[in-house]
Image (cartoon, rainbow, N blue to C red; front, side, top):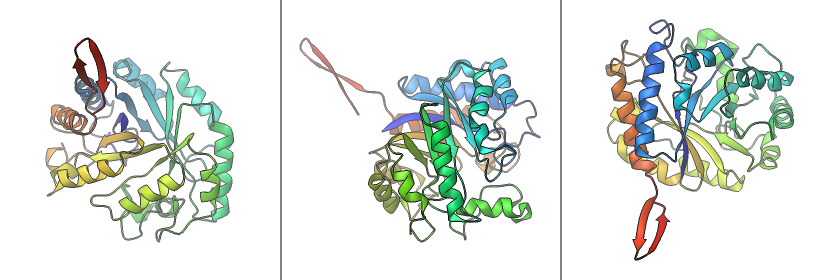
Length: 311
């Protein structure tokens, strides 16, 4: 079932939001507020989460608070990769959380934290162990990124791709499973951390790994799963059939569903990072997905007895 919806992914990162078109995030703020109201009108029980920020930047959260975005949220999310991309050390995790707590009283979710096996699988194993010691019981949700390595023939969602050097190639080594589905050494340790630790696993359009991913998640004892439904993908042929198949397969988990990626023809610039020309269209997409995949509980009546039936 859908536990939460998340509005965008890493909005303060140039790879996911073209803030040269929206330098103060004013369009983003209005878009998210409208989308949150649309989701709330469909199902007030779904937790509304501000898209996980990367880098962890308290000034961005302060900006969202000043623009009134946090009034419509029930949690804020952060992403951290100190052993791969961030300019801080892994032991600074508690301080990074405190920085955000200083700007909001909302719960803080860690919707992506991970370590690549780019240099050695043992580095990933150490990073998982150390992360668990630093974060367990400190925040209500932790989603480890990710279950699978990214297939090498698929591009990572970054702006400059191979020009980024080793930073780009690390994207392909974040999984607990290799591309061919064989386990890395950190997989056994992860199984000891569930169900408190969840997984963030993005599924591409018509992803061939969906069925085997579900099997692995169940074997590992995963309860909490973060994934996404792409607004851009919703315009592909047979998009609705793929969304239905994906969400039916993920029904056993408590899903945090991320809504992001602008359709090229609806952006100010023809790119998935672009602010949309009309923010109402993003809100309509969010509402439609919640209506389809996270409808509110139905109230059934039997004479004087009133009870809730989950849809």
